Amino acid sequence: MTTPQKTLNPAESKLNQAKTPGSTTVSGGAPGSEEPAPTRGKTSIADVVVVKISGMAAREIPGVWDMGGGLSRTIGAVRDRVPGGRPNVGRGVKVEVGERQTAIDLDLVLEYGVPIMDVARDVRENVISAVERITGLEVVEVNVAVNDIHLPDEEDTGSDTRVE
Image 1 (spheres, rainbow, N blue to C red):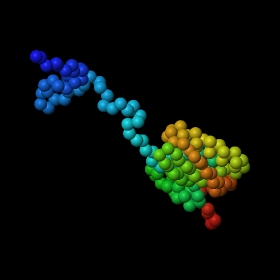
Image 2: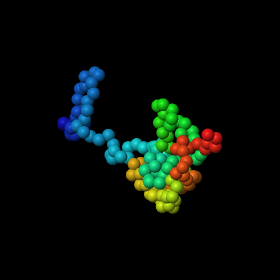
Image 3: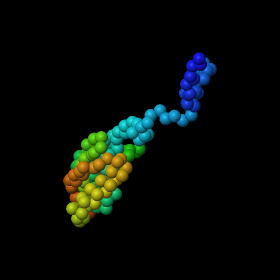
Image 4: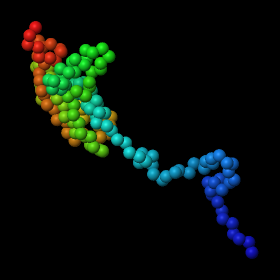
C-alpha cells in the first residue's frame, strides 16, 4: 500500500527545499498580508505642519500686512533683522490637530482701507483649501481675529516708537 503524497503549491515547495546556511529563500510574490498598502500603518501630522501651511496661506491674501499680536510682531521684527534669521511663518497662528480634523486660530494685521470682512473671508477660504489639500485633514473651523490695522505712515518695524 502506498501513502498518498501531498501536492505542494510552488511557494510551499520552495520553502521546503534544502537551504544553504546563511541564505534566504524568497517566495514567488505571495503577499505578506491581505490588507492593502494604505491601511498598513498610521500617518500623523504635527501641529507645526498645519501652523506653517496656515501661515503661508493667510499671507498669500492681498490686504494681510502681518500676523500676530503686538509683542510677537516686535520680537519677529528683531528676529528678521538678525543676519541668518528666518521669518517665522507661524507667527499669529494657533492650531489644534487631531487624527482627522484640525481647528485654526489666526491673528491678523490688515492694511488700512481694505474691507475687513472680505479679507477675513478670503483668508479663511484659502487656509481651509490649503490645509485640506496638503494634509488631508478636515478643517472644522478657522477663527480670524483682526488685531491691528497698518496705517500708511507707520514704520515697517512693527514697534511703537514714541521718541525719535
